[in-house]
Length: 235
Image (cartoon, rainbow, N blue to C red; front, top):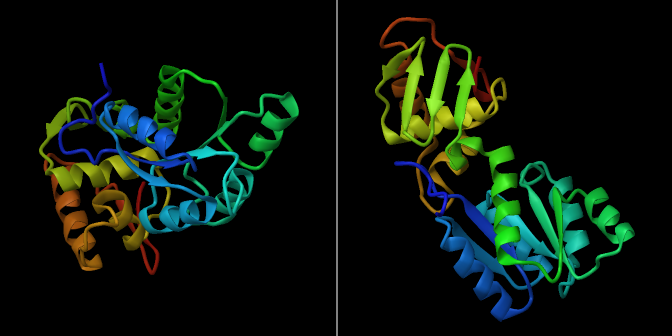
């Protein structure tokens, strides 16, 4: 059965980069059948542009591409602060150990050789998403006295269930996936609302206020920290 995101969750976005139209279509079809969204690129330059504009959750990147090779695309993605944390799965017909090492040394998070089974590729995709975005995969998150059940779409504090709206739930998921990290308003807009939806940055402050109120509804200190001039963090 597909791993469908929980209620209210933003479906993960997968960037598929391949210069063969039939391959892009096949991969998109199978990935979307698992409950994800896809966007595609036919060459390296387009891949970098889409990664900057849409900030996908994970990238499937073919090695042999026109204009810019997959290796160069990966190198540039990992060199940019805005995209360096996006996991990259390099796909290549190059099966020699030195090629695999080169791909991983460039910054790829995983390496799959052709020919491959679509089930293996999907499994690798899910494994890498679970590593960087556990809430999107329905896993349980725990930070301090907070516990978030992504699959059941429930949040508990000190064992007591809290009531959160869908946006507040996504905000808390983001904070709990990387406790201590400071998120700017723009980063939260991209992560929680997505770049395809226009939302004023002040809307983030409104929903942070609602999240704080919900988290303290049954007692306890405010776990959300405001970092002046930078943004917000959990803890």
